[in-house]
Structure formats: structure tokens, C-alpha cells
Length: 217
Image (cartoon, rainbow, N blue to C red; front, side, top):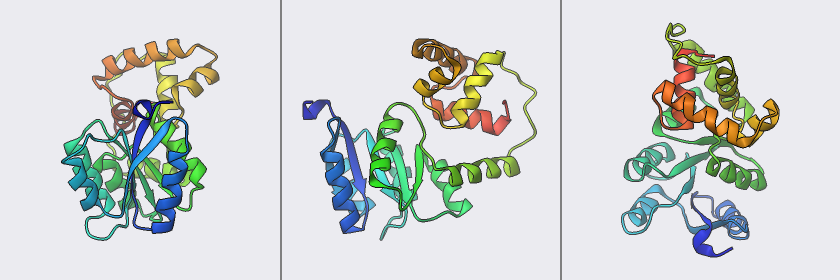
């Protein structure tokens, strides 16, 4: 595959050995490229001012200087289309909540095997939101504590659309949802377009957030 057609991934990680090993694994992939691997958010933001934004950023939270959550917020402000996957040893509720609010598309705990991290990049590219089971439970617990009572607004969702939304919340990709419901990928894509229109959202993450906030499923 031509390098220009590969998914561009930037890596922001201050552990030199981990950064070098992960960058090499990404570069060795047929469909991914890692043109930038730096140790600080400041370096990444400086280059972002001068270069084309990446499609995906792998971001450590515990960085020197600007932390990864603030760095994610800055990247999303400057390049809303860039998706960020957080890499961290932090399991605290506050860190998870702040990362999600900053616009993170995934949240993986270290030490996640580097092969799984590369898989997560592809998941995000396909519209999924990779998150490990422990963190997923924390997110659901937080929403159950802080969200209002279930919305009385049904948005006209059908039973099938609610099924699909439930599977989206569980983190399944469109392909996995199609397989589980024994329908075609195209059918799921059509359902999702209808769901987005009914919920007045434009992305998977916005739909999931609305479902959790209003307890629609």
C-alpha cells in the first residue's frame, strides 16, 4: 500500500522504549503510518501548527508539561476530525471522565499489548470506541450516578434501532453488530443513518453519549 493512502498515526508518549517499539510496530503495518513520535504535547501541537493533522493520535495521559487530557482538548480544538486514543496507567474515575469530556475516542490501560493497541487504531478508524472492560464499567457507573432520570423523549426509535444503539454502547463495531444481528453491513449503516437523524447527532460518539445521558436503552 502506498504510504499516502495509509492511516496516519501520531504517537505522544514520554517512555522512550515504549514509544520506539510502538512506533515501529505501526510503521511495519500494511495500512498504518507513524510519521511522528514525540515525548510531549507541546511538541505535537507545535508540529500540528505547521503540518497536516493526523487521522489518529495515541496519547499518554501522564506527560511532562501539558498532560495528555489537556493535550487532547487542544488537538480537538485545532483538528476536530482527529481521533485520540488515550494510553494510561490511571484508572481513577476523574481521569476517565475528563478524558472523555476532552474528546477522547478510546481509553486503553497500560500495559495493553502493543498488538491490541494497533487493533484499537483500526477499530477507531472504523468508527468504534475501544475501551477496556474495567474502564467501560467505570464509565457506566459514572453515568448512572450523574445522569438525569430516563428521558421521556422516545425520538421515535424502533425496537431494532434500540438494539443497535445498545450494541454501540457495548463498543461493537458496525461489522460486529451486523454479524450479531445476522444482517448485512449495509443494513446496519442504513439504520445508523436513521438513528443519527432521529437523535439529531452526526457521529457514533455523540449518539452513544446521548443514549447514556438520557438512558434511551
